[in-house]
Image (spheres, rainbow, N blue to C red):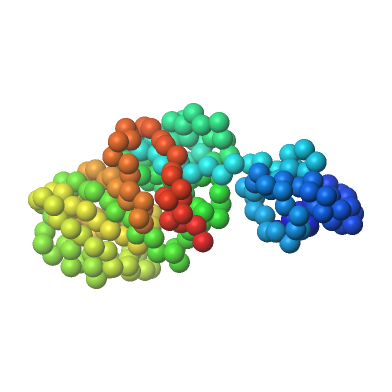
Length: 231
Ligand code: URA
């Protein structure tokens, strides 16, 4: 939104008065005096007028190393949610940018920036996700070709997008997906007669789970990591 419009709406002052305040240097935007009402401001732009804070919400971007046993939800009656692992002051304003099943572990993102989380989760963005998987049975050589061709999911009446399977050991693999259907990894392995025993998300797009981050802990993303999903 434009700064002049934001100010007239927010303060109820006539636009003439807003222009006067701007010209007099009474507006401070993100720490510097702003004299143009044409400046675009966003939800997380700090705006002060004549020493009074009009807007000061800080954008928060966190990565959580999710342990097994926690639901990817903000509230639940039955199970502990990943929110209970956070003691961030902005916790109640955060939402999840993607999910993992309760038994799954690994990289989970939380933010209060809806635009940013849509870049992570919107199917059109086709953000890749990399999972490390342990299975009950040996992973056959054909599995990679079957996953690359796509698996038909009757419930949704669709075929999964080409996925890349890299077999690391007889019962261990890395799987890269560009979509996130319900229980997708488990269902794909089920379709080839195997079963996923453990599923750990290592990466979302270029963002890698920090290997120094212990399970159950979160840390703020750095500027470069935030920028991966900023348009
Ligand atoms: N696919 C699954 O089956 N489970 C997850 O947690 C993530 C992807």
